[in-house]
Amino acid sequence: MIAIVVIALITINKKEESTTSGQPANILNNASSDLGNIIDNTTVMENKTEEEKRSNTNLSGTYIYNENVKYEFKDEGKGTMYDSDMEFEFVYTVKDNNLEIDFMLDALRDASYTFTLEGKNLTLIGGEGTTGGEYRLQKETK
Image (cartoon, rainbow, N blue to C red):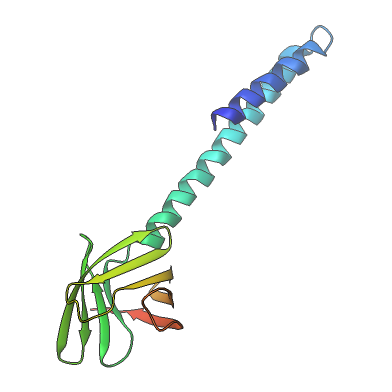
């Protein structure tokens, strides 16, 4: 954003130098207004990006894969996979749209996924440690 401001100020100065007397004030006012719009639009874009990041990385909640399997993601990076009447604890990390699951039980294979979260729909795309494929889960509502 600083670069945009510097560029805009250089543009304002060049416009002032190339005008005749009496006109620089109008050009400066217009340029100042344009600069304000640029800054406002950049701030909106930055805020939207941060909002999108938060909504894409906050997996907190329980997601149902099928009638037997569901995943619970807690805020502190811990979770549980429920498979029929069994529970498997795990820790997870999210970076960008990558999800790493490390099961506490060594007999279970840890997994890496690329994911998308759209509303209540979580889509996991299998990567390292998985059988590949795409898994669609639905957030449980209580």
